Image (cartoon, rainbow, N blue to C red):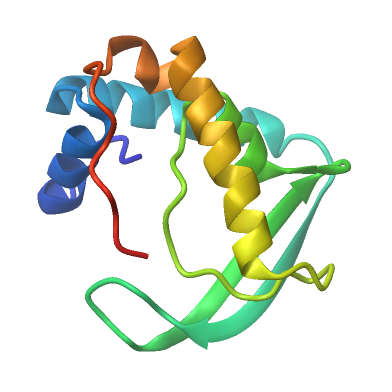
Length: 133
């Protein structure tokens, strides 16, 4: 989530996905930023992979997977309702296939939504729209 309106179209799309206002999206983005900063005070490892980007561009770029201790940063954020399952998925450094990992993230996101964690606390009751990866 975005902590400001620097990318208004992206922030609007996130608001629609979560079923919240722009202000709520920005507040949740600021909380996610603070949470990441706090988590990264601990030792962490970054795994990178060069792959074609998704979204508006097809330019290749580095994709990163961050582990704090023995936990995935993205899993922690998704499970706290501070991120969603979206992006380009490439084979993980562990060898795990992206499709399997996406299912894990989708389960964590569904649980966070059901428990109304993070941004889901203020979300509309309807299921978010299907997204393009």
